[in-house]
Image 1 (cartoon, one colour):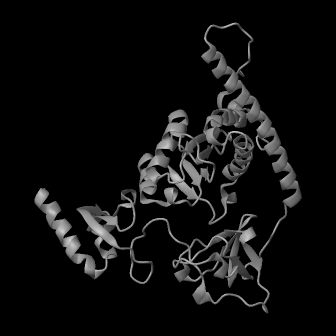
Image 2 (cartoon, one colour):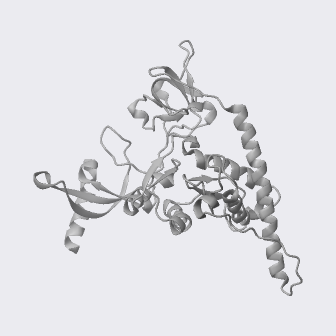
Image 3 (cartoon, helix red, strand yellow):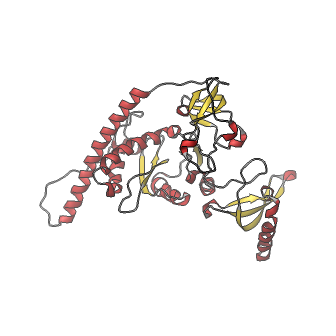
Length: 364
């Protein structure tokens, strides 16, 4: 799952597309949305477009966007029995099939939106049909055929005399979009094939090799001009290759970022070249609050303590009671609210914890 963003804003207010691709059959579902789509809104689109038609998947691969890293999404997936795998940091190729679909869809939308930028969202139905009716190179079949066991009937234009002009206009418009979608898909697939043949290459890094990390997708907590940041930081040792396209690095703990990166963001370190000081290393801005643990993570401000509860964990002699508090974090929406154990809070929060505990006890 991923988003195609930064599209022209349509008359309906959409500027993005939520893209969902089945790993087995490569079936695609497309949903228009906005760039400010929350975790809850994303979940609703996923339920409406995937679970409604196919049931609950065992696991999903998504990009590392804030929607998929939020507490809401994490807990929701646990509740319905889905396992979530986040793609490699800062590179969508680890969610490869969705990334390829995004490229193809982006080409199709650019072609269509170039002529009618305010109504590209009306093109998505035809685009989804075209993608699912095309033979996939990796499976040798169309997603429609693999899902249903037959090829769907295609709409055919019939030149009839009708007394409802609106119906004729609607049918003609839809057939025109279907034709456009097929043409755009053919052109996009040809461009993708040409690009793949030109750029494919294998890059291998060895364990312990010193490398530099691109700052292309990193930024410091303090806002500043991108021109002032170093283009490369390091050097850092390679822990191991992850498949053929990603590298896991050994990074300082205080960087607090995912250590696996696409090979395009890594290059060998030559011992004589100057690099940024490790203390100046930019860090990734996290999309949601993390539990505060002294000395390990960034501290987030508690706006309110909303509720209190106790949970029993462990079995038999190891059974114990855990005291937890429901927290509203400063600067974050309610979908990031989370239950946190008492040990995760700094001492100055104790009055708020005591107050929440008293309220909960009195209401029982």
